[in-house]
Length: 168
Image 1 (cartoon, one colour):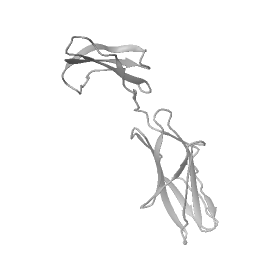
Image 2 (image 1 turned 180 degrees about the vertical axis):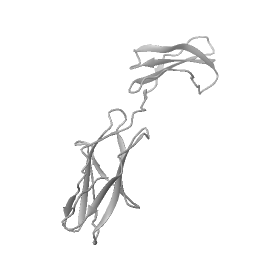
Image 3 (image 1 turned 45 degrees about the vertical axis):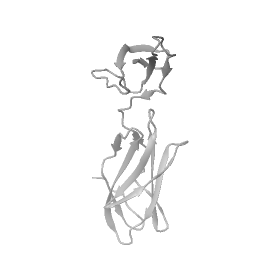
């Protein structure tokens, strides 16, 4: 009894990256020194040798996609909407490989989770406005499902009624 595996790119019938190798009786393997490509999917092909000496049918993994690219943050509301006693921050967030896991706004010392619309790619959050004129600093963070993190620059906003925006 033994196991063999190979690594294939793009689909189970794609280009072979690492030809058939013996794993012996090990049920886990580690491949080193591979030059995998961001955004590409890789599949393991597996087969087992029976006691009779015959090989099983080949089975394939679901695929593993390499994602080392940070999300993209565009169209950030640099001058948030002031509605009643609230400020609304918006940004368009995108990640073409693994998708967006979480978007948050850090405003001063407070962190706010932003609602993310998968269809439009727009993240937004409504936070309480300050009652006295003051300067607030804010940053938006986006995290994709591969845990890559992108953050905006820190922006400064002077808030008065009506509010005024000044960037450093």
